[in-house]
Image 1 (spheres, protein in one colour):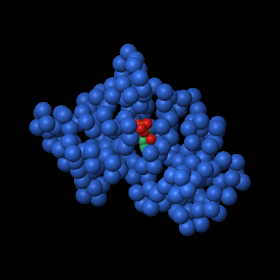
Image 2 (tube, protein in one colour):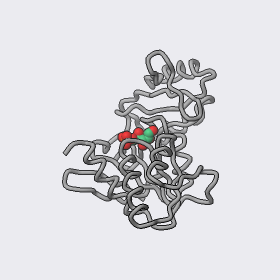
Image 3 (tube, helix red, strand yellow):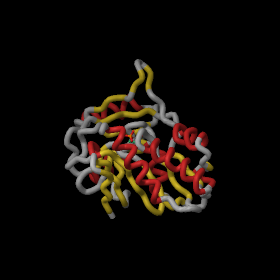
Image 4 (cartoon, protein in one colour):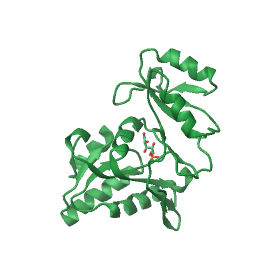
Length: 226
Ligand SMILES: O=C[C@H](O)[C@H](O)[C@H](O)COP(=O)(O)O
């Protein structure tokens, strides 16, 4: 089994948590892709009434192609459940997201959801966060100054580039990835980053996830985080 098979296993498992009539936050990425496909299939087979709230244009497009009704977050009254991927999850079930530059919308959808489920293959689990670069979305104006401040603090920053062009997020901001190695206390780092003017949102998702579905060779593992 390869990594993609494990992603498929958890995508298919997670769709079982969706019930008729729900408004569901749909995350972004190569794992969520399988969830969206499985949801499209269930809606077709079981004639379910589901509203999807996508966290990226990519997910919105795919969901619409599969016949899922899609609404913007500000068009719905509430979100029952959000299912999303993650880049890294530590032993306290804190996570890094934003590898696919969608973490700002993902976080807004997550904090407005009654429940959050993460779906990951087993390679995403780690003792301590930090070996995966931490994405930070920043306002373009003054971003070189912010970059220098990150450097001074030893965060080992790197702009996310496509050749010599800055990659732009949905909100037309830049991403600076922090190569932290070992992160220490993620709550402290999250606060430090939030306090810096020009930072829009970082990819630390703390105390947010309720259930984690982990893909292993022998099937999905369900972890109740909180
Ligand atoms: O910005 C992207 C998101 O945070 C994704 O959920 C995360 O990068 C995991 O994506 P994947 O399932 O492709 O590893």
